[in-house]
Amino acid sequence: MTTLQTAAQQALEALELLQNAIYNIGGEHVTGLGYANHAADSAEKPITGLKAALAEPVEEPVAWRFQFAVGGWAYGSQPPLGSKYPAYPLYATPPQRKPLTEEDLRKLADKHLFYQLESYEVSGVFALARAVEQAHGIKE
Image 1 (tube, rainbow, N blue to C red):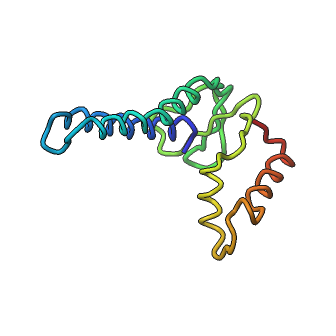
Image 2 (image 1 turned 45 degrees about the horizontal axis):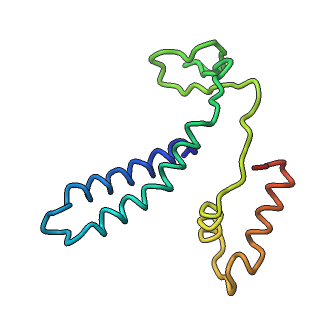
């Protein structure tokens, strides 16, 4: 999932939470405005993420690579219409990669590390991930 898609999904979930809070203000499920305040507070991070993702420049592909039905590849300025084969965008420069967020690092560590005595910060797992990013020229 792209950064924009992730941010848009988070924003959508936050907006749905706010909508639910608004619908329940004064209803039998809510005794005060605490639920609405919590919903509004939780919407701040996804909204900020969506704004940042939308502010990123979007590079348009310079050409498209697509497969023929009989095999082989063709190139064109537009992807073919109605083809059942995938088309791949080609760019003049590769997109600049950004470091993983702490949340993304934690998800990856949870997925790939089966036994961890210490926290990831103490054990150096996060430091190792940052060193690998730096070695590959991935900067903020």
